[in-house]
Length: 370
Image (cartoon, rainbow, N blue to C red; front, side, top):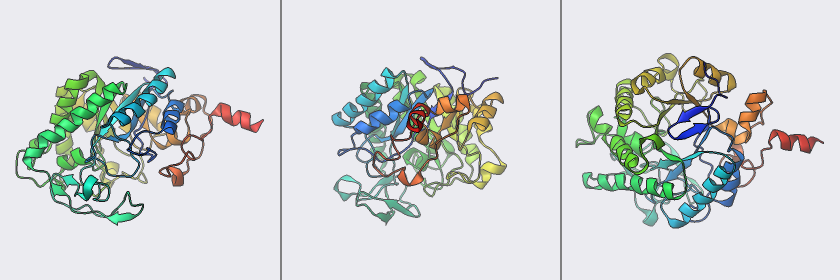
């Protein structure tokens, strides 16, 4: 039976433990969506994680949805990320880049030239979005992508994957979760197309599979993971039959041979991405069986529930978000049963050093108390 502290072989990498740092948007990029110098410190502080998955990183200007999120489509952005990866590697860590296109979860004020964001269909999300103007604004109805534009979307992912390699990452994760572009194509609540990318499950999954296959051509299948959130209603998402939709996707990703499947299924009902279905009809075991390869679970785990999931065979790796925000040395704290720092949600997206790189490690806390 495995525990959080056992090593794990992930493609060409040997992870020293099975705690994965989740991709966490922190809204601290510099001008031009360049990763900041404090991001170098932030990621390096957490290099003891078995694997770090970077914050969601837009693959193009079109793919941007929020202020101060980093990109991977300009030379300056690549150079900024290179500082991060060099420092993480020097500290003994391993880091994947998460490739991101937000699709309809954007706003004209965030798009170059004030154009409409794009999506599979012209369906407006409910709610509001925090924009580059510094205020929350109503979502707009996106422009449905024309069939002729789809190859260009795939190429954006290819370009992002190539740039991630230049930036020194160890691999990439294709973000197909949380209501962003690839997830929007997957689910019938947001995809009402009648062409080759809409209608049937096979058609709705086509873009994700084409993107994944294209990224594999850049990186090799042993360095590409995919993230899914089957039950999440985040960003006004839903699907009429998530079990059928996502089981099909898991089977096809198995056939492509990706290095891991990362699934968000919360273990508690107060998790921001929890849905009632996840409490009564868990989908993760179904997807694990359908995928058959390395399986990563994410969704409010602590040390005890993470170890239980590993020991029972529910997962091979456990992804932690907020605990890594507040505890740069989370691995050591879990290993020694030390108390955890208390996270400050008000600073999660504040843009400052506070709540980002100033959470103390155990050693720092001990020195401060002397």
